[in-house]
Amino acid sequence: MISVTGKRMMSARLLLWLGGMAMLILTGCNNEPSESSNVLVSTSVAKHMKLTQQDIPMHYTTSGSVTSDHRVSISTRLSGYIRDIAVREGDSVKVGQTLLHVDSVHAKQALIQANADLSNAKADMLRYASLLKEGAVTSQQVDKVKLRYEVAKSQVKQANHQLSYAKIISPVTGVVVEKRMSQGDLASPGMTILTLEDPSSLLVKTYVSEQFVGQIHDGDNVDIEIASLKKHFKGTVRQVVQAADPVSHQFMVKISLPSVEDIHPGMYAQTGFQTGTRKALLLPEEAILLQAGLHAVYVMDAAYIAHYRLVRVGQKNQGMIEILSGLHDGDHVIWGATPALRTGMKVQL
Image (tube, rainbow, N blue to C red; front, side, top):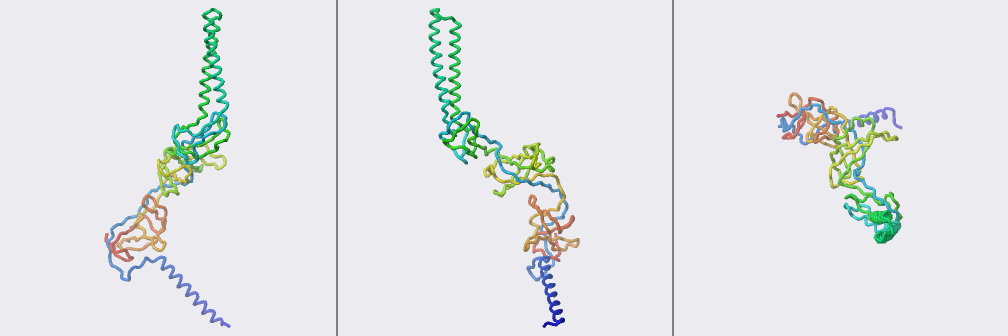
């Protein structure tokens, strides 16, 4: 059996041990890294900066997808079976390239019938011309026969034109992104067979909340990030569709993209719209130290003495990092010293 006094002594030792461990943890988190037991008296600082609040842009971030501004649906004007389809998804095509043929029996029969009518009308016209010389027919009857001949010629031309639709060619230079029908399928007028996209005219489609749509205008610059490429681009608002989606109550915004070879339709993109400015403290990246996952800087007081201070950092902005806490407006930050900075050193600018 353990006496009451023994239990009290064990509890006191446990509390002392826990207190010592806590002090060690706090000391390790707040103390600057130690490189030498000798403390240098002074150091020469290469760079220093007095912190002042600066205006930085506020961004509203949304997600969207890359799509082509020029999307074409390929269909036929004839009814017939598809023959000799020459492309598939992912193929690049040029303007005027043959995509497929439609075997239209009705168009062929119409051309045969039109040629037969033209032959009869031509024969009648020649016969009536001879009869007119003999006085067997009147000039009015001859004019009617000539008119029927002209109509027959027009019908042949129309039938040839209609049959030309059996050969479907590409109206644009682009990429086949969708193939809905295959060889042997029955195509009907207006039914989409292929879908083409022009990769040279890309844009990002995204949706913005009604809270921010009033702050977005045509021509505004937009920050675009495509995660799969790990690249940032500058886009331009091309159109704000002034009609909200009835379900999500969000507005579609179309953003023009620069011509970049690696960007393809369907890629995921993040967009950042500037909706105003705010005050922030910014420091160059080189002024911030990283030790054991913690960020810190050296500041200089009025007596030119260096002090190690932990900070909390925010987003990067054009080579500068926002300081969220740990520093104040007017603080003097120093870095690039020779020898290395330590707390208590006399700073020589």
